[in-house]
Image 1 (cartoon, rainbow, N blue to C red):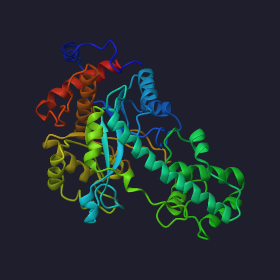
Image 2: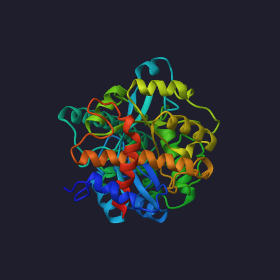
Image 3: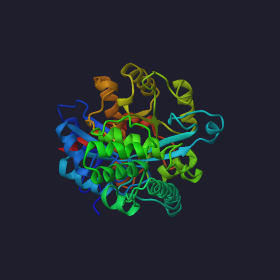
Length: 409
C-alpha cells in the first residue's frame, strides 16, 4: 500500500520551495466530514471530492465514527483530485463525573456523553493489539444495540400487519459499509416504505400507522426531514424500536485519548458551543473553565462545526482559544441525510471572515505537518508521552502549509 508522502521532498527542501511561493493566502479547508463508512449525506466517497473541487476547497478531513476503513478510498480520491487528505476519527465517550452530576458536555441531551475526535492519524492506519481490541469492543457494543433496534422494529412492523422487514445485511449491502448506525435504519425503513407505496396518500396513511396515529410533521418529499423524524420517533428513547445503549459502548474519555495517541493522532475536543437560542451546555458555558479542563487532559486542540453557531459567538470563542495556543479546525460534518455545501460557514450561511479562515487553515497545517513527520517515522505534534509540542506550533504551521501546497501542486 502506498503511503501518503511517497517520494515527497525533505523537510528543508519543502520549506525552501515554499518560501519562493508568491501567493500564500489561506486555503479553504473542511476538516470534519463523515463518509459512507459511518453515515453521511454523500452517496459515495468521490462525491465529497467533486463538491470540494467545485467549491475550491483544497483540504478535506475524513472523520468517521469508530473506524478508519474509509482511509484507502479517501486517499485514492485525494490523489485524483489533488486535495490534501486529513486522516481523522471520532468516538463517543463518557465523562463519568459529569454524567453523575447531570452536566452536559457536547451532547445536548445526554449528561456526560462526550464526542471526541482524533486528528491526523497514521496512514496506513496502525493500532497496537491492545488498542485494536478496545476499538473492536466499542464497535461490537454499538452493533448489539443496532441489532436489537432492528429486531424491535421488525416486531412492530409485524404487529401493525406490514410485511416490510429490515435486515442488517441488507443495510450493509445497500446503504452502509461495515458500520451500521441508527440513521441507516431510518433510511432503510423510509426507502422500503417509498418502494412499497407509490402514492403520497398511501405513504402518509402507512407512516401515520407507523407513528401510532400521529400525523408526521415532515413533508413526504423532504427526504432528510422524514428520515430524521422516523429516527426520532421510532428509534430514540420512547420509541417502539428504542434499545438502551450499553455503557461499554461509551468508554471513558481517558481511554479514547489513549486510542487516539496510539494511532498517531492529535486528541481534539469537538465544541458544540451555542444553539439557536444562544444557550451552551454546562461544560462549555465558561471558556476559561473549559480551557482548564481540556489542559488537565493534555488536550490542546479543538474543532468546531460553525454551521450550528452564531458568527459573533463563534469568533469570540475561537479567538480566545487561538490566543491560548490551541490548534483549531473547522468542518461541516455532513452526518445527517441533508446535503449542504462543503464550504464551512456559520448559522444561516454567514461566511467565515478572513481571520477565522486563517485560524482554521493554520490548525489544518499543524495536522498536515504532524502526518508528514509521522510518515517519516518521526515524532509529530504530539510527543510519545501524549503531550503537545505547543512551543513548536508556529513551525508546524509553516511546515504543514508547505506540505499541503506541495501535495496539491
